[in-house]
Image (tube, rainbow, N blue to C red; front, top):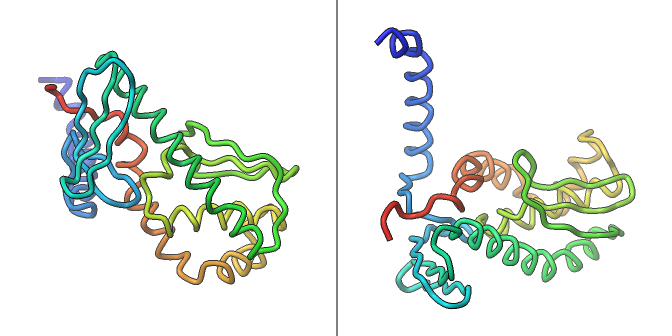
Length: 193
């Protein structure tokens, strides 16, 4: 009981944080995942080969996995592939609209960044961006493409972002609100299969 007493304030703050998060995001079950900004229920089934099926009608994503113990690894790889495909489909068009020349594109597992741009114009994106709505993913790409011209967050940088995405503030807010769920969402599997 001494330990619990010593951690009482921390427990209250943590509990309050998760309560606010639940309220802001409309609740979140252990089997929930976000994909393109839509909440889906995650179902994991044993199968010989990996595949994933998204059912919009049932609002489920079924992950067929050879080893259920490694289901979160398969989910991570699925998110990485989805994010890469979405970026590959949209980035050239956005870059053309912004007249931005980028170099290499990578999709990585990042804990604290949605994206980054190197001085050489190499763009890195968080593999969990497939969880965000398409307009929010576009905002992240626009943000990094703006860094090709301006590496800081000066007023000039934000003017470039705003010209390409007039709604960027609401897209940033969405990322801020849902970041805790997205960054851990892919590893939240149903407790019972």
